[in-house]
Every structure is written in structure tokens, then in C-alpha cells.
Image (cartoon, rainbow, N blue to C red; front, side, top):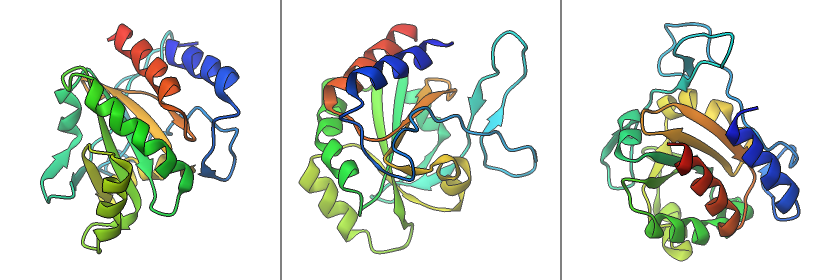
Length: 199
């Protein structure tokens, strides 16, 4: 059992009453994306190599734009030792409740150590984003947010069964694990600090 699995298991035991989300099953905590088998379907979650002793790292490739229209790709992971990708939706109350704490976390860490990227799952690029901007301002979630598109849909959103869903990636873009459901700031902080110790 890898360290993230242990962290998430202890997180589950300590904070199960706090976890909530707009998911089919609120008990689903660990997200293990299934690599695509067709190597021509880009961008997608894919395995880098295989090993019987330890699972191969999973990397994703995607292209999108933030709310200001700046191009963003998987290269964004190289800007920090640890990246938290939080998938949320405008209709999801648990998502919105946890966003103030996420905004505080984004401000408290050095961006070379840790960063948060939000992905709005229910608003596509090119659609009216005024509601998204209002919700970000109201919640204080002052970190980059991307709107959904086909590339992000294939690479990330295809692994999402409910919102919020949070994924963690290291500075090389390797997938470290994920959690379905919202949580208090202190619970996220514990997971973030444990993962940063491993980097």
C-alpha cells in the first residue's frame, strides 16, 4: 500500500462525517484512473512503463485555457513540487463550501512547493463564464481555474464520478492519487504536507 493510500485511509477514518460531495457514492474516496488502451487517443491518462514490483506512474496530457484566456497544459505541473487539481461544478454546494479553505491553502504555500488548479466541470470553454467568476470571487478561491473542453474531458473529467473530485500530481506530472468528496481545510492540509514530505 503506497503512502497516499495510507494517508487517504486515515483521512477517511478521521473525517468521514465531514466528507460530502455531489457523487453517486459518497463512500468512494480513492480515485484510480484507468489508463486508455488505445495509444492514438490523445490526450489521455496513460501508463509510462510497467513493473511487477511497483505500479507504473500515470501521466496525463491536456490543453486548455484559464479564465483569462491563457493557454494551460500538463506543463503547469512542473511549476510546483505538488499540484492539487480540484474538479468542481457551479451547482455543487459541497464544492463551493470547501473552496474558501482551498483559497486559503493556495495563498499559504510557496507556489514552487504547492499549487491548486480548479477545473469547472459544467462550463465549457466559449460559454458564458460570468457565474464561474462570481462564485470564485464569493468563495475567495483565488487560484487558476480552467473551463472544460474535449482535451480536459478525455484526460481528467473521464475519471470523475462525482464532484468535487481532487487529484494530486508531482512536479513531473505523475499522478499520485485522488479523493472524491469535499473536506475541511485542515484535512486537506494534512494530506498536502504528507505528500510534500515524499517529494
